[in-house]
Image (tube, rainbow, N blue to C red):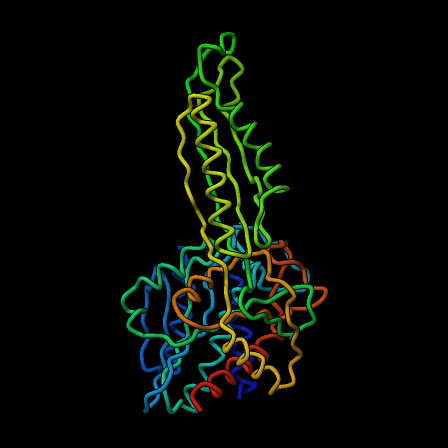
Length: 382
């Protein structure tokens, strides 16, 4: 049971995190503050610098049982936050802000500290997991590769994301696919410069990029996927602003997104084939880079059911998602490594959208997240 005094402390802590955000792979201060708070509740073990600035806070029972983890994200976004007229804790860092609610996600996981300290578990282990670099899709994979993480042999992992536009506190859940897979493709073409008066003496990549743009537009209409799949052009550039030169360099950046990992593989292969064909026909060299790779987040049914049971125990409203979210989540890496589930938690019908410059996590969600997580612990190692 979350006490009023600790809830007040958590609220101030969340607002402090909001005031001092850090972008992916730079979350040192945030991780240190998490560790400082955790140490005051005397966990059995704290492991730092996991996969970057990742933190694992571990509570152990006397008897053997399952090891379960609760994930939160340390990083903020490289977006400027609007000054809130009624908020004193607007970001102090220019161009960086917690506009996805990770400050609140951390606080909800930290809310378990009090109960785990005053009412120790009898069986198994509970791991409070704070991962770096979620926004760039790097942190979870790096944590999984750390031998100290592997040594925990986690049986199940749980995570949540606040969802604006949904009734405050409503749980959104789905068996199997919960959020889409996505990746960035950066396609570099290299030809040969020439004078703009004699372009025939060079190899200009603009024509290959133009054809590729049209191809991607047609691909979105005609690609035979098993479920939702889409390619979005996010950036393109050819040469420099110099009117006397026919350029040699060009780049096209894409985001690929799908509900199914197999559709992602097929979509990637399709674009790679087209790029190869264009490069050959236009006599261009090319490189394709993948970045910010997120696998699909696929829930395991038994753990989705456990989340429903935890919500129902506290008469928290639930809703079954008809289809997965189109956005992607680094949590998918954890669910490829072990069992578990992710759920959404409504952050208010009038809440600004995620990544909006005016977004602010509602502190009213902290005790709701606490009740769900605490009940999952009780139901797991009864």
